[in-house]
Length: 289
Image (tube, rainbow, N blue to C red; front, top):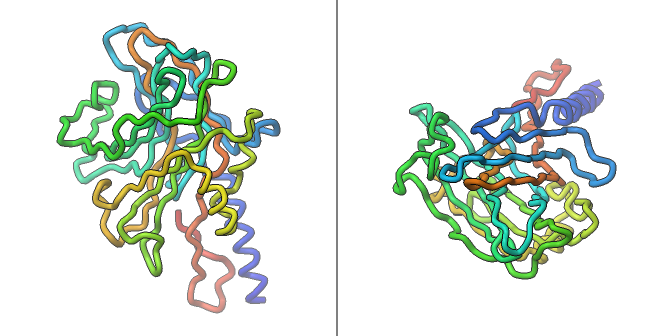
């Protein structure tokens, strides 16, 4: 009976992980990002996000973030900027992660994004501290330079280009867990940038990446066009904190421009922390998100 109870608990955990893992979450800024949680039979995306916004103010930024409902360990998503040519520069698209409110009630978060630079993606990674939701659309999120840590300055990624007016990259954000035998005791995250190697509008290569074997992961990781190590110091994380915070989609529409694009999520590392209670009479497994 004890074994049966554990199996039933695990089944319940699986159902909860699948049915309460993503949207609706918190939407920020003045650029709406729509989402669809249903697995797409064509693209094989676990979640799909879309943006289509014109910034009519030529002198101001327009930004939007849509975060997942619950905290996540990691994410792999294909991010597609649509209707672009080599000379167009409509804005920036990417992912936000490690988002949390600090003791002052302001937002700390990291974001990775890319823009079109002469027909190739130009990528950056920055960490911001003390962002007020009211100042979200201001330059630099309304914070001074001292509250921004530039982890990767704008960097062109070779080997990826525009295809049928689309510029697409795959972004993997891997949280490095602190604990026994960690991969790197100083790293909080590893970001990898990939080419859309499927080339057919799908994300099948990266489906379930967080659950693949080490050999399968190593094979995929070796194909990364860019690897970015983020230390715990850069995101103000302690040596012992397990990285599991809010994640989501990010868009920045430049002044006087129209940005259209989509996010195709191949994998979300959202495994719950599962622990059985001590009593032999327990009939369930506690799940903590």
